[in-house]
Length: 294
Length: 264
Ligand SMILES: Nc1ncnc2c1ncn2[C@@H]1O[C@H](COP(=O)(O)OP(=O)(O)O)[C@@H](O)[C@H]1O
Ligand SMILES: [Mg+2]
Image (cartoon, rainbow over all chains, first blue to last red; front, side, top):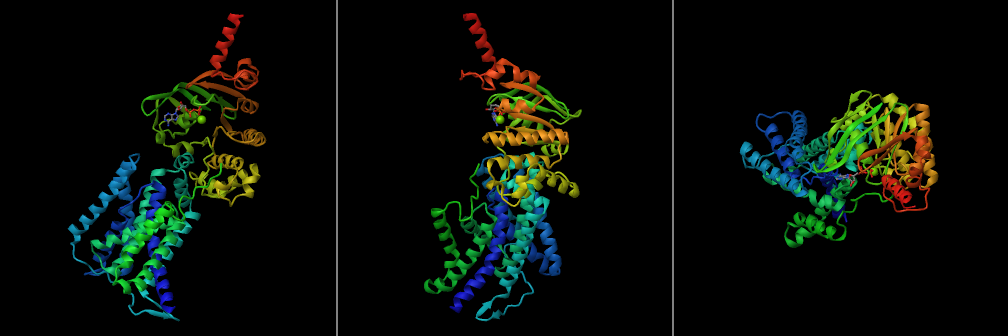
């Protein structure tokens, strides 16, 4: 029973990070209808940049975080402007191909610039777990959760309270009607990529710390797919719940199934689940929130 | 004054939909643009507000001027800032945004917070039902409420001219009357200029001072509302006062009359 608590608690903490990265993905999909296969590679890119900045000559952590966040926002803008905007109006498949292309370009780029060997991304977080009653909590998971929660709250406030946030949701809802009220739709597209860049920065730092920084880091991004399929491609709330679920499922699989079969289940169980969900509810549990009433 | 001068619009670079449309909407007036389905009324409004591009439409000739300034070939956001608010056909309220957020989105081009709040109160004053439902998502409002919200959202940009595309579509007669009354009040009390597109000609001509009739992308008649209300052919075709149905156009009506005279 305590083991179950343990696994669930740590799974939830890890899951919040999945929620955050999935949010970046969902935002782009909602605002621009682009399925971004390069989300994981953005995260990897951020991880590399973070490792390079803190390693060696050692930039202080706060400076690295600032530079990285700013840099990833700029990268988001540049990518949208440079390679996605020219694709507006092209068939969905072509746009998907572009993001897949982007994914490989980013992987190639980081190896050319920074080499293929695994880098360490050290964070000043202690290793020994905190013990809260019966539950052992890993400090890095806690840090990840706090960061994710801060980001999610920040986005929540932005989307409901700010003029630009409301405009972003309006564009996701009805592009032409948004144009009619004077919202500059291309600007909103760019903004959604910038936010995805920001989410990737957070993910890159946390996962880079946990599994080390090399091109495999991009694989974390693939977890976004079961998360968003579970939650619904077009639902922000779904992304958050999907992320939490994914964290818990992985954690439980690692705790209960791995000892039986000798490991590795947590890496494919999410996908099994994704396929099952696709059979039952192709639009996810929270997706397709169109309200039928006119 | 809004002035369209010989405007031509082409969709997909091939389909000529507006074939030289000219019309004037003097400041402070309600002008009706009438015509049957497919005549080009919505295209005319989309031309004015500059949102043809996503439908692959393009203005190939002519000009659109508002108070002497050309607004054709401008960005939609620019046109909104210049004082044009379009309320699209089918309402198009933001379904996942609350009533209040829909209004906030309507004020997107403005930065004057205090005035925005005032205008929001004004919208709630004109549409008390919206005030009651300010926290409800657009998608959960009734058709009539959504139409009110769409108009309210348009007003939030503080426009000089309101373009209304078939506000009566799919609504019960009582509601249509209510909405038209409010449009009339906006015109009277706020001096709001209105270009009103309708298939429901009878209703539109009760509040408009002037009317244009459009067919196949051309203006075929341009008269005072009073004259149109009393025009026999218009009555027969658009106001549904004749028992014979199935005719396709105002021209057909005329033609038919001529033929009838000739036969008898
Ligand atoms: N996006 C489009 N692409 C091609 N043709 C269009 C498009 N929108 C409208 N049309 C055509 O233009 C004509 C006028 O349409 P519209 O302006 O919507 O008429 P109305 O509003 O008077 O019913 C119709 O024949 C319609 O089929
Ligand atoms: Mg129409």
